[in-house]
Image 1 (cartoon, one colour):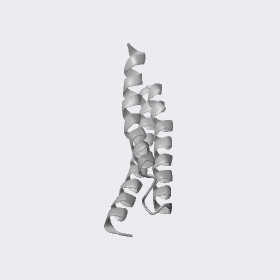
Image 2 (spheres, rainbow, N blue to C red):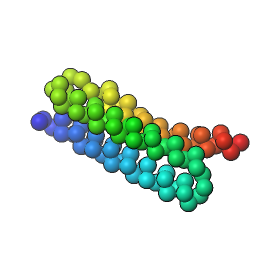
Image 3 (cartoon, rainbow, N blue to C red):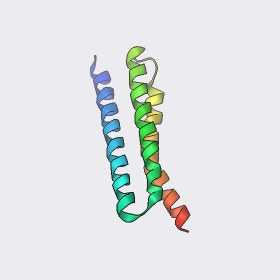
Length: 94
């Protein structure tokens, strides 16, 4: 494994950890504040984390020729979960 592959693997692990933290934070926040629409972030984070894992496995299985787009899509789901939770919450409050 070269240094680039190691950096990609570390970033993928970090994304999965971040997804778990965001999902836990939105779950706790939803129950403490009663903003139940924040629970929409949980499935988006789970899907994002799964896509990151699948992309990483595919990248390693094909020698780096495939799978990166799947991981990037997973990262977009993870980051997009924050946007979706707050935008949906704002839309339902108005």
